[in-house]
Length: 411
Image (cartoon, rainbow, N blue to C red; front, side):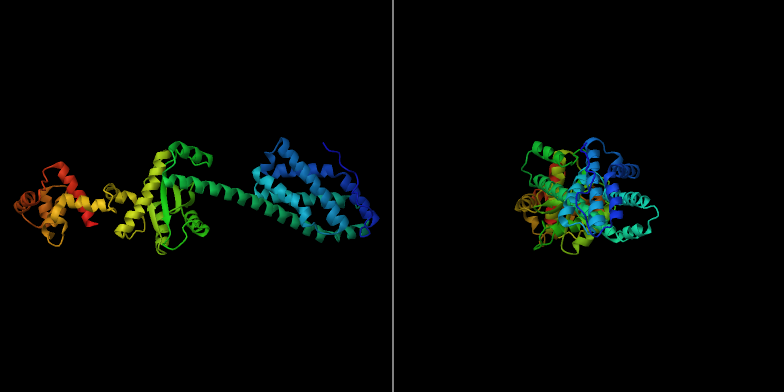
């Protein structure tokens, strides 16, 4: 252990009487005991300090030794406040304490907890010399102000380090989510990158894509902060992963997400022109990428359908996505199945008949009742559709094709 200097090493200071200076010199020389007292108090009161050992605990001792020495030298002897340069080491120490997992209230509490120890030690040496006591008490305001500056510097350093690390992690998450959204990275790469940022792939998650209104900057910080604040203010489960992607703001929510709360968030954003797509729950690298794709497709289909929302759920649009409803191929498919029936104005009765049959699950009596006609009348209509348009609903594949074609046509 480095040997402590026994004197302040500043030379005489006229503002301090010889009697008080002598007592400060004695306290300074014995500061090692006070440092140990402060450490013991911190370890007793604060769990994170109690958990420190080895070099971590030694770094606390070194810092407190320097800080206690500055306490005697700067406000007591020199009667002034510490400069920004003199406070710089405490900002550095605060960043280290953050890395060690020390909460801010424990960090500041340890500093303030040491102040009574130092004052009690000084007061105990005064005996009955009232003039020295009065002189020491005149140093109380500057001492407290100096301590406030130290606490402020420590808080700034701790918060700066937290923000730096959060920003670094946030950027890493943005990059990982963008890789998942792009769909071009291999599953092996996605798995490695997800693990690097602590994204557990075994936990079922639901992808929710928040796309801002046209003309707004979806990748801007305010957009991400807005979504994050709305999600965190509601009971939307735990472990929310959120970041910027090319299409907007992407959130991965736990499988126990409160659907009512999510709809409430979506309702607030839809009022400003946002669209919110929800994928299906999935786990694993491939499953998570699929859920993200589903959330994107849900928005595309919901927008195409002018779906009122507030949420565009892929589960509601899965069949339409199967036939790629937003592409010209879907219309071509419907025309190939229904032929001239796609001209709904000229064939309203035939299309009405086909819709009723499909919606009844191809139970003809139920379909006839829904249409308000006799079952024989329905049989006649279906026979005519078979002869005129080649639509034979007794064939299972034809039933499927007709049902899909009607879904597309209705869109």
